[in-house]
Image 1: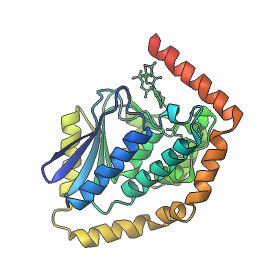
Image 2: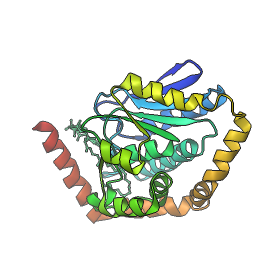
Image 3: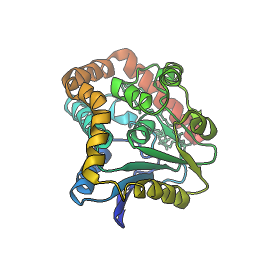
Length: 253
Ligand SMILES: CCCCC/C=C\CCC/C=C/CC(=O)SCCNC(=O)CCNC(=O)[C@H](O)C(C)(C)COP(=O)(O)OP(=O)(O)OC[C@H]1O[C@@H](n2cnc3c(N)ncnc32)[C@H](O)[C@@H]1OP(=O)(O)O
């Protein structure tokens, strides 16, 4: 992860090849988010070092034949990442310079503003298409971003939106021709708060988001148990094996 700081922290996800979210990356993100808060940055922009993938979502290897202790730590660290990002008092924006499926879409929708590169990229919560259920807080992040009816249809169909579709439904706020332009547009969004007192801004954001945050905070243990029960089911392990094989086969073509 690289952080440039000119008052606005630009945090670049850098875990080749596809920025899949494993335990190490999630821990690094959490430390970085804490640093951004401590350094009193004006705001934070998340982007990717890959030219084609913002993030491929959760690292499936963390869930396939998992070590019991590690997979639990993985999930709790993912919850922490979401609580820190969705609940950040500082302004957040995502310069989405590539595909953003599942957990990649979760990161983007946890931010306050999204600019995505024009091109053949897709974004969405595709869990149902994989035969799994997007956790409540994944669903809440989408519902917080696009109208409820469109969110329900997108979630139940596992829809991956093209850039044009994402713009039309409000899943992204703007498009950009390249990464530099996407970052500039995110900076422009964050600079809109230059004349707004940061305490009032931060508190307003937290009040606006508190219901959704509270849902996970008061349900963390049950959420973790639900995940662990699901991931340890033989049928889920079988699906993960097939999905991994499919991804491998695709990448070798
Ligand atoms: C999936 C069942 C989970 C069951 C667990 C139980 C339930 C609770 C969990 C609920 C929440 C889940 C949220 C998630 O985030 S699950 C992850 C969903 N992610 C995806 O479906 C994306 C899969 N990846 C892709 O579609 C593509 O890789 C891409 C992001 C569009 C990029 O395409 P491309 O640039 O062509 O790259 P390749 O496909 O060739 O991939 C390169 C390399 O990376 C490996 N890989 C890709 N995605 C993942 C991943 N999410 N985890 C681990 N590894 C991944 C891929 O296999 C290739 O590896 P090799 O080079 O070794 O072949």
